[in-house]
Amino acid sequence: MMEKSNEDCPIRGPYNVTPFKRALILCATKVFQKFKSHRKGGTAVLLPFGFVVKRGKHVNLVEVETIRLVSQNTTIPVPEVCLAFKHVKTGETYVVERRIKGEMLMHVWWRSSEATKIKILQQLRAIVLELREIRAPEGTGVHNVCGGPLEDMKVSWALVPFGPFKTIEDFHYWLRDGYSGSRGLTGPPWDDLNKMLDVHLNGRWPLKFTHADLHHGNIMIDGDHITGIIDWGSAGWFPAYWEYARASIDTLGGHCDRKYVDHWLEPYLKEREAEMTRVVCHEH
Image 1 (cartoon, rainbow, N blue to C red):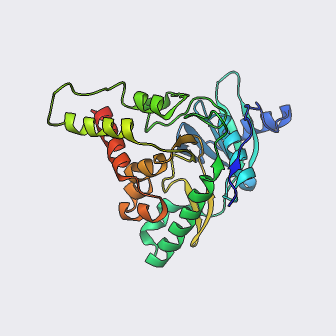
Image 2: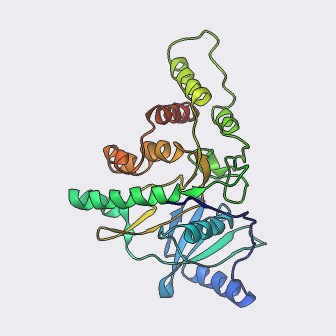
C-alpha cells in the first residue's frame, strides 16, 4: 500500500467558532457539569443531542489537528470535531465532538467471549498498521503533528510538556535524564539501567505516527465492532517501538490481559523492558 504523508501542520487556532457558539458552549458546559467524567488533562462533559465537550488547561488545539490528520489520511474511526477554542480568561481549551456510538472497551472486555476479543484485536491491529502508514515528512523528529512539544502524564508527570526533539537519540537522552552509565557500579538498579542504556544507544528504529495512549478507556466498542479511537492528546511521531512499549506496560494489556497485546502490536521486548526500567526508576 502506498505510504501516506501529512503536510505542514500549523495550529489553525479556533475551529468553526462564532461568538454565539462560544457563548452557547460555555453556558451548556456549566449547566451540564454534573454529567462529567475525568479525562487526561481535563474533563469530558456530556451535552444533549449527542455532543460531548472536552475542557481543561491541558486539552489543546493540537489534538484537533491530530484528528484532522488521521481522518484525512486513514479510515480509522475518530471523533468528529464540531468546534474548538481556547477561553482566554481561564486558559482552558474547549473541544466539542459528536459522541461516538458504543461504550468503552474497559466496560466490556472482561465479559466478552474469546471470539469477540479476537475480532476486536484484529481490528486494533488493522488500525495500528494503517496509522503507521502515515509517512513522516522530511526532517521530522520526536514531536506532535505540528512540530511542537508532546504531553503524556505517564511519561512526564503532571502533564508537563516535553520536547520537541530533533532526533530519537535526543528523545532517549531526555527519557533517561542524561544517564550515561554506572561507572563500575553493579547490582540493582544499575544492571537494569545499563541494559536500558544499551537499548537506547544501539537500537535503530524508524519514526512512526503513534497514538501513544491506546488503553481500554480510549477504544469505543459496539458489540464486537470498534466504533472509535478517542483521546489523541498524546499522539505524535515516536520511535516505532513506542506504541508497543506503552501499551504493554500500562494500557490495554495492563488492565485486561497482557498476553493479548502481541496479537495487535509488533513486539519490541527489549524496548519494553527498557521503558519499564525507566518508569520504575522515575517512580522511585
